[in-house]
Length: 411
Image: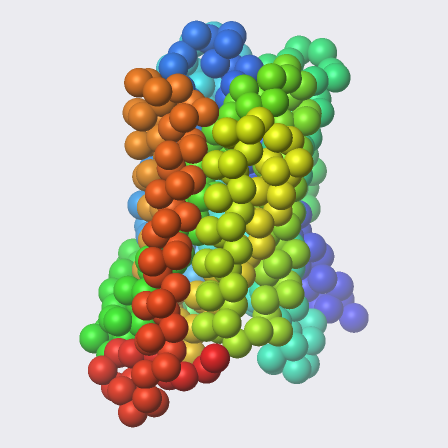
């Protein structure tokens, strides 16, 4: 009974670490507008602050992702939590914009160090706890999804509530999160200290796409890029955007809208597993386009109900696209190439998450945050609509064309 208990504790420790990390990663989204008023930076700087962590996470995942297979899971999860906790401290003591950027960079390093190791621990220990391999990996995947999306949703909600109703508006959220990091560190002590199996030397992740799936990959990458661009733009600017749109100073209300969008995505991801991969992609693209169109309409007539419906539609679209993309590329890619291709999809996701939001920030310098977000929403919605017939055409390609890298019919 000792081994199963240890494995359960390792599984729980990894889940707690993931949830705390992703909660903290999105917590500042509730406070960017408040920080902007306090520190006097521009809307472009606001988007750059969000993107700074992504810029560190991208290369960090390639470097540190495979490292836990060599040196063990615990050391990287602990290092990641310590780095993220240092980022919380830097936010608390920051007295200028440079201090805020330093905090985001250190937090990004923490995410890069710990994310892959914690996720791998879930997979490792689920395989020991459940004899049915398929069930074990499904439970590990669902747990990771719940921790990641739940953390991303709860972070800005917590930050908004504490900033609105608690003291020390710019500090309390990070102090509370630092306490959660301490709890996660205590739980991470139960993670395995050494790799379960001996493997070859460490090498960075290889991002590559075999010729046989390049057309499939191109369409999936396009839809993934759009979905994660929406996620990134919303995380960076939506609380500030809604404060302007609804003419409210209530940080909790504006941050709650972002939490609603992310929570809706999480629920959609669980439901999308029942759909065929291409059907999920098509429904996701349609829902994302509708959600963004509603957001544009909400900015014109300043209707809070339309803004809420926009969050719901965008969340459903993001969730369906994410699951559909991952399912389709997993089925279309040979097993021996799957890791590299999925890693490349995640690379595209992170580029979408952190890149286009800077363009919104630059546009806002001339036209304001409200107009810049409206333009971004309209452009992404139009691209979603244009992508739908391409996905339908590829899905209807005869199965024999799969060797040329095209979809098999699954609609």
